[in-house]
Amino acid sequence: MATVTPITKVKFSIGELIHHRLFDYRGVIVDVDRNFQATEEWYETVAKSRPPKDKPWYHVLVHGSNHSTYVAEQNLASDDSEEPINHPMVAHFFAKFVDGKYVRSDLTN
Image (cartoon, rainbow, N blue to C red; front, side):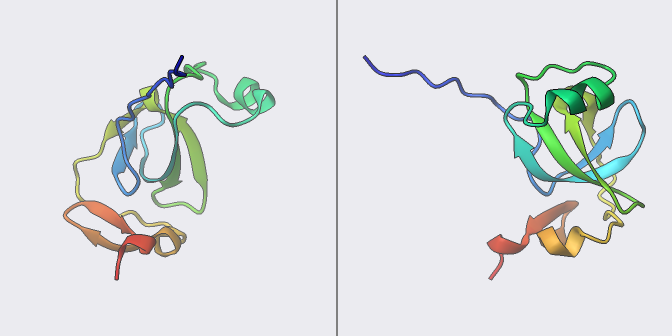
């Protein structure tokens, strides 16, 4: 009998611009976890709205700052501004910005 692997569909992809619904900031996705991967202690301390752990979570560089954050999908919306993100680590993850989306460094020639 075959093992069935549940497939989780993610709403956002790496390089996509987002807007945080609760904290009103812009950012860019740098990594995606199909479900919550941080510690229980982090969740209890930081995730005050108690988003679901069995849905996608995203690693985000926050516009206009030096930090990144870990955000549940339910708290994100698309940012259609097509304006680049100002963050010192953008060049580490991305090679260029084209049509409102970042292109990963490892995908360019």
